[in-house]
Image (cartoon, rainbow, N blue to C red; front, side, top):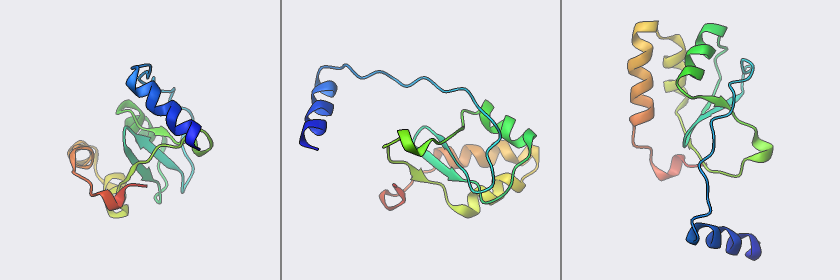
Length: 110
């Protein structure tokens, strides 16, 4: 553990870190799956159709592979996810903008 932390600190100080490339969108996630965008994590408790998944992928959302990911994300509230998925296409853009620009508290960090 100490070695890993030391290595991470050294990589940061030497500016060896690289920005991650956005992975390809992949298949439509199943009910209960988790998707991420930057530091936000959204769990899909509402089933989505292919049109909604295409809309989300165009905005940068991708499925989360938990096995390879140790990062911490801010969890989007369940009611916000539900409102976004049930919104009309006209309302969807405004709700999405509010979700990604909201200042999340540290207690929502997972």
